[in-house]
Every structure is written in C-alpha cells, then in structure tokens.
Length: 403
Image 1 (tube, rainbow, N blue to C red):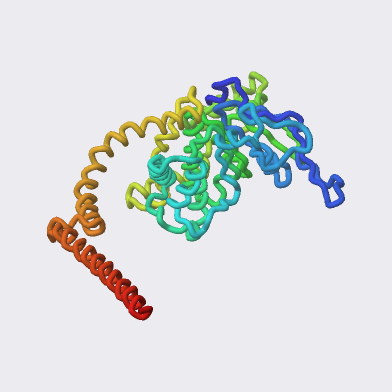
Image 2: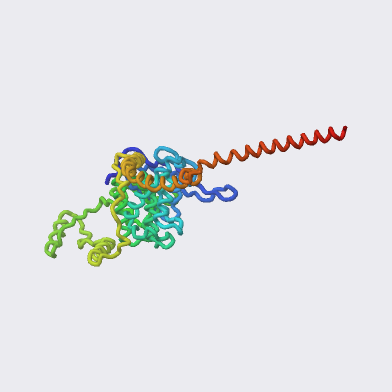
C-alpha cells in the first residue's frame, strides 16, 4: 500500500495529554495521556480502542475543538485552531448533525458557501458528490426523512465538499448495510490512492483491517501498540500453504513428510470465505438479474477529488477555481447580451418618453409655451395702469377738498 509517499507528517502529537476536571478544578478523568503520533501523508491510519479509551478526545484535539492540558499537536505543521488549517480538513462525526429540514442539495450548497466557493463551482461539485454517494435520486428529499445509512452518505459528501487534504472519519460505516459499507471502504481506498490522508476511528475491526495502512491501539488513554497491519497481524511462528483440493492419500503423504522434519501438522482443512464476501457476491448477482437497489448504487469518484499524489488539495482547488472561469465567460458572453437589447430598451424608451415629456413631439405642444407668456404680460400692464389711475384720483380728490 502507498503508505509513505511523503516523509512529511500531516498530524504530529508530542506527549499529548487531556485531563478533564470537576467543578473544583480537581483532576477527574485522564482521557489521553502522553500520546505520541506521527501520521504520514497519503496513508490511512486506524485509531482503535474500546469505549472510553480516548479516541474521540484525540480526534477533537486534532480538529482543534479541544485544547490539550499538556503536550502539543500540529496539523500540516500548524496549530489545528488556525482557520487555514481547518479549511484543509474534512470531518465525518459519529452522528451526522445536519439540518433536518434541508434537502441534500441545499445541505451541500450551505457547506460550500461556508468555504467561499463560487456558485458555479458549488453546483458542479454537488452533482458529482451526490452521484458518488448514490443520492442523486434523493437529492430533494429532506435530511430528516433519510435513513441512518443515507445520512452517513450525505455526511460523507459534506466532508468532501471542500476537497480536503486530511479526512477524519469517526465510525463511518455505522448504520450501513454490508453493501454500502463495502462501497464506503472502496471509496476510502480511492481517496488514499489520490494522495489524501485519512484517520479512521471504528469499532468494526474488519473494516479497519480492509482499508488501513497503519493502526494504533489505545487503552485507558495510552497508546499500547502501533504499526502496519502486516507487522501486527503476521504470525511468524506459523506457515500457511494454500493448494488445490487434496485427496486423503496426498494428505497422509504430506503429514509423513512433515513428521520426518519434526514439524507438527496443526490443521489441514479447506479455507473458508468471509461472510461479507459471500453476502456481497449474492447481492450483486441479484442486482444484475433484477436491476434493483438503485439507492445503494454509487457512481465514480468525483472529478475534483482526483488529485495527483504530488499535488496538495489547496493547489487542486486553486486550479479548479481558475480553469472553469475562462470557458464559462466565453460561453456566457454570446448568450447573455442578446436578451438585453431585445427586451430592455423598448420598455425603457417608452417609460422615459412618458415620464420626461418626450411624447410632446407627437402631440405638437410647441406653440403652447409661446401663447401662454403673452397673457401674463398683458395682465401685468393692466394691473399697473389700474393702480396708477387709482393713485391719480386720490391725489386729485385731496386737492379739491383743500380748496
């Protein structure tokens, strides 16, 4: 498995410790104690342990949701509380806390807005993600009407909307049927093959065994064992030989040869298939015959998630935001201008003509302003003459009285 493509550590913890205190600030529970982790770029790391072992507390400190009591944790070489660091992380919690009155399309659009993605880019990613998780047919159903397995799938799409470099999954296959769980595990492998780093926390050891490159086993807040699956699961003291079916005579001959070499035959039996493999084989055969279970069928990996292992998620996002803009503007320019001249100028010219008085040319009101001014001039002259005559009469009357 491509576990170590890059020597850089995506997540690094040094003596990480988290102690929860009571009301009187007395130490109550030591959830994590002196935890040292080095999660490399491009690998799938499994965080295992029973309930109360400190898995969820460790994930919350990596996400910056909890502050450590002692020690240090860095993500991409920076503090997990940094906003730029959070923009490169995708998180699927154990319980999908999504708005129940929004549908799948609105949910992904909402989270795309939080990352500042343009509308055209959000629409493109939403379509690809819904097809990838098999929810295209239920895109306009409310999240509150989804089953537990469907909520996990929309939660996975939400965690990938920003094309994260680090994806943290807490019990990703809980509540899923075996077929959907198998598809989720295949998706995890594809994402790892595209250079993304994944941290998987699960109680289902079979799921972890199928997809993880390395695992760390926690108990009582301490890291008890860590390593690759090949190293941890290899039983060096035993040798397994798988051949075609042997008859009784051949088996007896094999036993005699091994006894001569002082080797004990522990068991000779036919290998057994896994129950998961049997279930998937039967269901897929039924799907081919009846063409059913469309809601579980998923599409290919979203195109914007297909980053080369050498590129970082931030570089891919910048390329995707830059590339679609040039063809989009080229295609929009011939489409947008035509409706504007045909629709807008006609009503605007008519409205302006009515409001600003441009219709006077049709009504020919030009002579009206010439006829109206003379009457006020005449009236002013008559008013002035009347006023003068009245004054003259008063003066004359005053003179006659004196005489």
